Image (cartoon, rainbow, N blue to C red; front, side, top):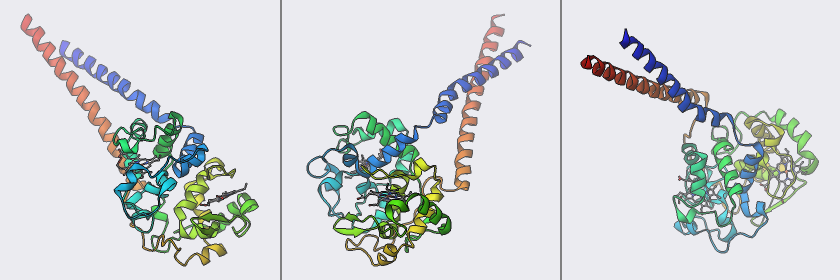
Length: 321
Ligand code: HEC
Ligand code: HEC
C-alpha cells in the first residue's frame, strides 16, 4: 500500500517538475520580438552605418582579408549583407559564385541553431574577436540584429529558379494589384520612375528584380535605410505576397533589358541549391515531432528517476522495521 502511495506521489512530483521546467521556454516562445525591431534589424543587416547615420569604420572589416574572391573594399566590407548575402546563405546561396563570392558562411543555417542570446554574444565578438561589432553598434541595435536573424529570415530558395532567377509559381496578376496600389505612386507603373545608382550602374525596380531577386525581396519586405517607403512587413504581406510583387516586377521593361549579365558579372553562374532548415510542411512536421519526442524523453527520465528514489526509500524503510 505504502509503495503505491510513493509511486503516485513521485509521478505527481515528476509531472509538476516537468511543467515548471518547461514553463519559461513556452512563455518565451509566446512573446516574439516586436515587428518594428525585426524590421530595424533587417535594415541594419543591409547597411548599419547608413541606418545609424554614421560613417563606416575606416579600412576593411578585419575578416575581409580571409578571402580574395570579392574585390570590393572599404565601407561595403562592413555590411552584413556583403558577407552573408541577400538570401542570408552566404557561400551556400547566391553568393556561391560571382563578384560577391567570399566563401563566408550561411547565416540562415547558423542562426537557426543559435538562441538570440548566443547571437548577441557572437555579434559582440565572443566566438571571434574579429567579428566584434560592439564598438560601433550599441546594445539596442545588436539586439535588433539578433531579433531579425532569429525571426525575420525568409527562405525563398524553393521559389526562385537558380538559372533564370525567375520566380517559380508566382501570381503575377495578384502582384500587379499589390504593386499598382502601393508602389506605383513613387516607382511608376513600369518601375522606371526612380533610378538607383548602384556601383556605377543605373538600376530600376525591373533590373533589380531580374538581376538580384533576393535583394528586391529583402528591401521590399523591410525597406531601405533612410527611405520612407511602405514595406511588406508593415503592410502585413506574407512571404508569397512579396514574391508575387517580385514576379510582376520581373515583367517590367528594365527587367527584360537586364537579362544581359551585368558588368560586375553578378549571377553569371547559377547559384547552388542546398537544403536548409524547415522549408516546407513536411520538414516542419518532422522538426515538431522531434521536439515532441525530446520532451517526452525528458518526462520519462524524470518519472523513472522518481520511481527509483521511491523504491530506494521503501527498501530502506522496510529494512529498518
Ligand atoms: C567581412 C565579412 C563579414 C561581415 C561584414 C559580417 N560577418 Fe558574420 N560572419 C563572417 C564569418 C567569416 C563568420 C564565421 C566565423 C566567424 O565568426 O569568424 C561569420 C559568422 C556569423 C554568424 C554565426 C556565428 C556562429 O557562431 O556560428 C552570425 C550570426 C553572423 N556572422 C552575423 C553577422 C551580422 C549580423 C553581421 C553584420 C552586423 C555580420 N555577420 C557581418 C563574416 C562576416
Ligand atoms: C514614398 C515613395 C515610395 C513608395 C510608395 C515605394 N517606394 Fe520603393 N523606394 C523609394 C525610394 C526613395 C527608394 C530608394 C532609392 C535609392 O536607394 O536611391 C526605394 C527603393 C526601393 C527598392 C530598393 C532598390 C535597390 O536599390 O535595391 C525596392 C526593391 C523598392 N523600393 C520596392 C518597392 C515596392 C515593392 C514598393 C511597394 C510596396 C515600394 N518600393 C514603394 C520610394 C518608394
